Length: 258
Image 1 (cartoon, rainbow, N blue to C red):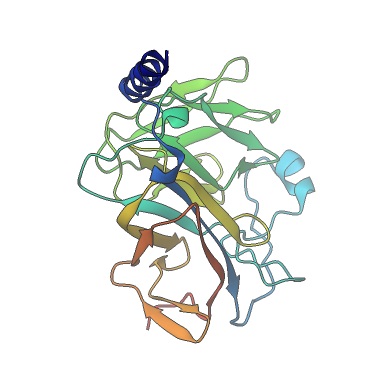
Image 2 (cartoon, rainbow, N blue to C red):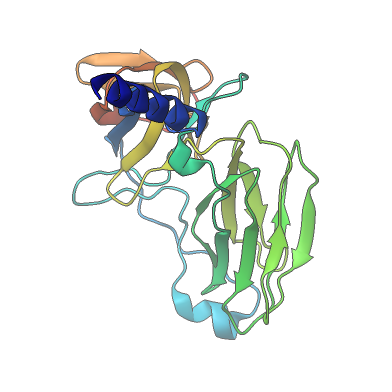
């Protein structure tokens, strides 16, 4: 009976591995919080020259730099794993994800940064009573500029990853701006209103992570405790060697080109 039990356990383990179920110790989460310690200018009002009766009522301001006034959290930093190799994907992330949403709402794009995988649909919708256009300046995919219907989503997919976040404009309303980060894996994140980010279920190993913000492009350096990390083309080599790799508080003092 003991021999039979051992055989059954071995069969179950092999079957699980063949089914794509990996042991928990093969994966880890990268997390951290990014704060901005430089001078934060007062957001400037945007100049509204089109559909003023609708768009003028929203008190729109420049959203290219958003810093939490209470805790200095830097919003909309894009962090992603960058590799030319095929990467193992956690079983829970292998299924094609639901469509990513980009809303034209209150005469601005929401969200400012959209994360998208190459096997995922981008749905652009229009929640406003005026016409909006989505112009995507893709580099490795086919760029497009199309009116967003008000009765159904405008759906697009992208066959190739983009090496950098790509710009999205509304050709009708020149102040509208968003960005799209397209990867061929699920390992990307965007910092929230408090500067927090997390990339869960990463395969363990030595990886290169990119850090990017629309004000400067690739971040040039990050303070990690007492250490200044110089980032060549925004790249920080980080080892994922445990369940959670917590970078804790990171700080950026400048988003200007030197």
